[in-house]
Length: 513
Image 1 (tube, rainbow, N blue to C red):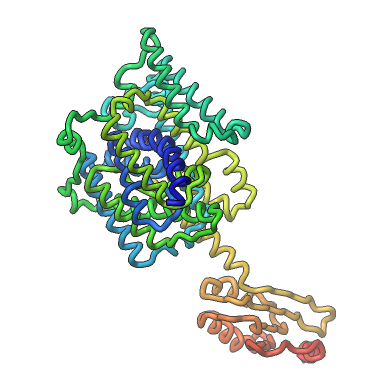
Image 2 (cartoon, rainbow, N blue to C red; image 1 turned 30 degrees about the vertical axis):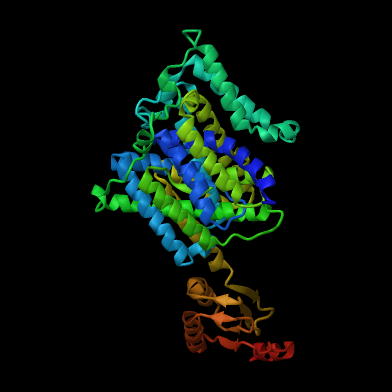
């Protein structure tokens, strides 16, 4: 009860942030808007209760919108997608039970940044038509190309609302306004939505500016409890034998788990009390949430950095804030759908566009470039792969490039080579090869190449004294070289591990031999 005075106000702030985001994510996903709010309810009530994250808030994530949009189109129905989501939830439960939370540490940060940047760009391209006036006819993605869609979607009323919403969102982030105690109680997204509602009510008096019903949110309104329960959708398992359904399920499970673990790591670092969230328990909780979302007709759920950071800044102390925010979303969904239906789609699209921009800021591209090609190349390949193919293939391409860059670096750093040229006709070339601490079969090609390039009649000192691990393949190459060296007039001395290097006088004796 002592923490209730902190958690209750924080839950109200998070509710106001989550409401437009839940609707916006559903819009971008091409899914029923009801499903976005339902995912927010599940993320708050179910995941919030099961999770051990003190400040994390779960709900539908912008990072999964492109996967959901493509999955619904590929599988042919929202109900078939729900079957894939249910399977993804079961996979996440398995991840948690198998203690797979540590696997996120093996994904290079350049690839993860590239994945998020690619998603951000896709969100911008998909949401621009709605921000300019495209009507929500059937929840599907634009049939035209994105440029043709922009030209066909212009509507002066929606354009004015989108510009106003964007200006308010940017203004709210200015330090002078963001630091005010009043604006903390009214997040920028809520201010933008309220202004958009007032505008569309005023624009209704002018035929050229008036919005059509298809340009407003359309959450179903139930007249009774039975009618409300009928709004829930259920999975269609008729495609359970379709390999594509399983591929989509695996993609959702992996990406949702990565997003969750990234959010957990970020929020734990910001926690003033420095509490640690059990990663495997979090995966288990998210898996339960996504299984339930698949059963009831929701969108994929992850822990979300935006809502979690707002929860932290609002002064939350425990996961009670996340749970209460879920209860508030449920009350709004059940009791106030008519108020939700006053919101213009253009305002939600603008919120999502700015969210996409934050994921793909130009400053991010500049920073990755300055970090060098080892970071920039996997990053930009992932971005291009996500934009041109799909998310899973894009991440796979970026990961493949990162591995190639690692192998190249490993290839170059397996040894240190020093060649002393002969000073007179009677002296030998003196070559010192000092092996690194870890030498594996990945270094086989580099070491073999250098040994083959050593001039005849040289003195070769192979220093293994610093090696903590040497692969059998490397030892075999060195032994083969030592065996064939006398035929080329090469004298080889090998310094084994824990053996002191020869003194300078001993080296001179070997050189004169």
